[in-house]
Length: 168
Image 1 (tube, rainbow, N blue to C red):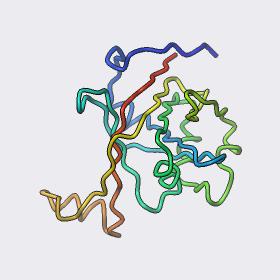
Image 2: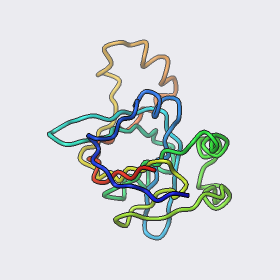
Image 3: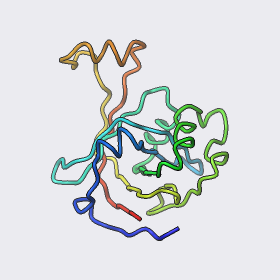
C-alpha cells in the first residue's frame, strides 16, 4: 500500500457528490481509549469562515455521536469500492453491540492523535468549529421533515475545519 501524501484541501480535486453520496465516508472519533466509527452518506465540504470545512450529520441514537461529542476532532476516511461490504456493515451494526472495527479487518492508525483507517484512499483530520441540532421549525420545505424524520430523531450538524488531508 502506498504512503499518504499530505496536501492542501483546496488542491484536492474530488467530486464531493460522488465521494459523499456514492462512495460514502467513515466518521471516526476517540473517547478516552475507545474508538468508534460509522458510515455516512450525508454531508458536504466547502469554505466557511475563511477555512476549508466539512459538515456532517449524526442522528442522536448513533453510538459514534457520543465519541464525536466528547472529542475536539474526528476523522473522515474515504475507502475504495473494494470495502463496500465493510462500509455497509459499519452503517448497520452498532459499536455498542460488538467490536465492529476489530471484526472489520481494517487497520486503525492515528494522525495528530485522531484515529483514521490506514486502508483509506484519503483521510481528513477535522477540528470541530460549530455544532447545532436540526430544528423542525427551521424546515422551509416541510416534506423534508416528513420524509426524513418520521421518528423526530433530528440530526446534529457538525461543522469542522479540515486541518490535515492525506491522499494516496
